Amino acid sequence: MVNLTICNKVKELRARFNFTQSVLAEKVGVTRQTIAAIEKGDYVPSLLLALTICDVFELKMEDVFVLNKEGKEDE
Image (cartoon, rainbow, N blue to C red; front, side, top):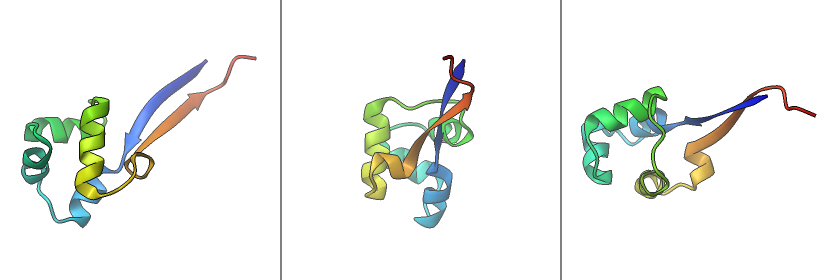
């Protein structure tokens, strides 16, 4: 069985853009706690939120969010 998780580079990108969690949260319309949860992998953002985050960084979805496959596929 394959477990799918979504990894992200939000924390790395936020640091590169010199944004605090609060600044990014304000830009995308969520709380600082939501940004913290996304960065820790505790919360998977909606498609709309993920696209909005990508728009702030002017990057494509695959440059910010990556689907991670763990485990063995059933044959």
